[in-house]
Image (cartoon, rainbow, N blue to C red; front, side, top):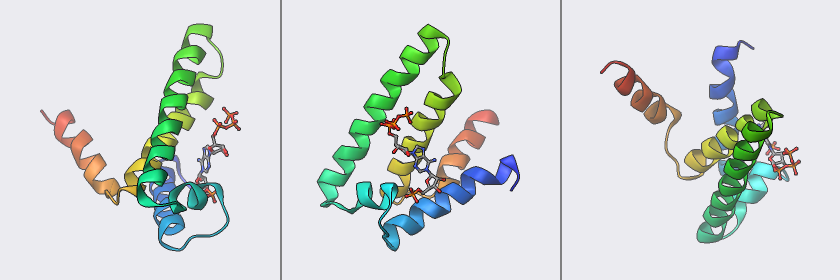
Length: 97
Ligand SMILES: N=c1c2ncn([C@@H]3O[C@H](COP(=O)(O)OP(=O)(O)OP(=O)(O)O)[C@@H](O)[C@H]3O)c2ncn1[C@@H]1O[C@H](COP(=O)(O)O)[C@@H](O)[C@H]1O
């Protein structure tokens, strides 16, 4: 798989994990009652953001922690049933300004 396609492939997996739950990390975090699932994802985003800050200040594991933060943000968007194209369109609109 090319680097360009990986985000789309992961996003499709997240949508599938929500719509066809299995026993996995992402299905389980999205499975609880709606409010609780959202709160759990938001809590992870808060943790991962703090880990990015620490990684940057310490100059270690910044790529790893950034991937965790971006991944959990994508997980939130997939959970909220926002399409990946909507996110990409937002970036495109800003880039074309
Ligand atoms: N990219 C990821 C991904 N990144 C992080 N994580 C999980 O998110 C959690 C992060 O929590 P923590 O930071 O607390 O993890 P940790 O292991 O304590 O600490 P770190 O070393 O990660 O900082 C871990 O359980 C990771 O396994 C991910 N889980 C899944 N994916 C993708 O999501 C897809 C679906 O995943 P499953 O639901 O597991 O099939 C997979 O195919 C992957 O592509």
